[in-house]
Image 1 (cartoon, each protein chain N blue to C red):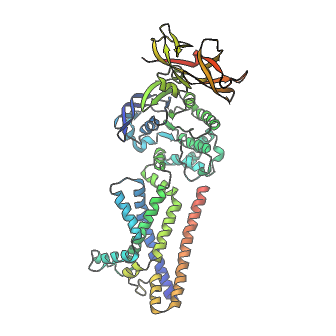
Image 2 (cartoon, rainbow over the protein chains, first blue to last red):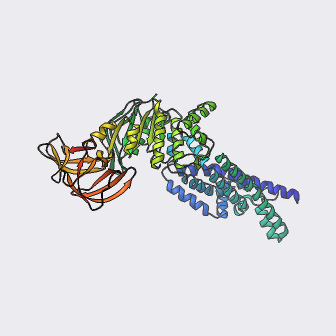
Image 3 (cartoon, each protein chain N blue to C red):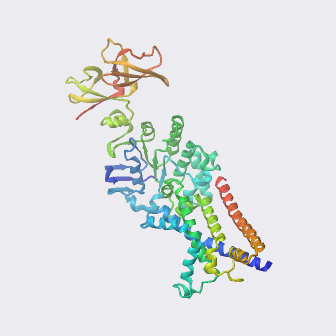
Length: 218
Length: 344
């Protein structure tokens, strides 16, 4: 049981952290583009992001499963019932949230900050990096929220991963399975461990956030 | 080394309205120009066009012959810009000042030296390790200015940098700014709605009203010979009075003598008078009959509001008996503190 727990725990952390990393990359970039530029179709994109936050995880999982299904458009990649497939599904779920928080965080900075940075001599890359630094605490909060969404979701993990023992089972799907078996003791144990994992990872991110705030004051 | 600025046939339209029209404006290398205008005159727009962050619908704005809109990062790195609401970054004062130097690839050791020197010029070196966002408004303005001059820009653009300061802080700030620029060849363009800033910092002043240049000249020229009433109001004349120039050159208000004479043509005119140039004379002496409406003590003088054919603001020395509200008096204008603007 212990071996199995460690394996499931490690897989949960791997899937959710990888999904958070991918979602952060896409979400922070997209949120920045939406906050700092006036590209065509911006309003439609913002509406899509806002809608994306409200999509139930099972629906997101279903969409990814249909794409990755053996007869689906991306079936040849062989990602259905794999950890990689689960990472894609969770990244899809976390991306709108991270995008929306990034956009809000950058818009809360002084509106003339980008222009002032340009006038100080920043090129585009330097400007964006500086804006991210100014919004660093909110961006970390976005990553934390993304991770929280990824690690706690069960619908997409079940549909895309299939809850296969020793292969794609993660903490949330293990809890659902234990409850279905009537094995509440194991379900509660998994639940407590999952909470602990979430606590540790969010604690680490919060510590980085505090260091960021202290660095700003120093 | 400063740069030469040039504006030709500039027309700038915003939301269908022409907000700026400048036919010709040149700023010589190392010169200090103040664009003086009321709120909404187009001062900040002109500054933004000079900085190349906005492009005009028509005309050319150049720095050393290069169009500012084509200049990109390279041009912006030759500029220093300080605004009335500085956006200091959430790090220390020193890092704020070092940042533009880092973007210009100045080596780390040299960056620290230049940042500290700029902070010293603005008398805020003691704040170097403090978080910039926790400073007072006046300190933030000084840091913003230090950040703008640390790179030794060819052109320094200042957008009402003292606007948010109280009178006392503003005076000290302007003195330090003047000192900080004293031994530099930087070309400075400074916009303001306060005549005292223009007089103190500029060697040439542009009077901008409703997006149009009304007059360009030395601070003294604009003060002594404003071209029209709007420029007179801009340079600080407290009273603008409808008057008449008679055939013999006497200037009268409501047919009463003002003590002023004018060589210009006879006809309607406007008299611009500083409050200190309104003299209260005895009721039996020649002057414009008025009634004292209000008297209030000011720093070193009485501020007197007068009613009659026109309304006037006067400043009367504190010594002697203050005028009493309701009292009848006559006023004449001190020629040294007045100017007559004829209609032609």
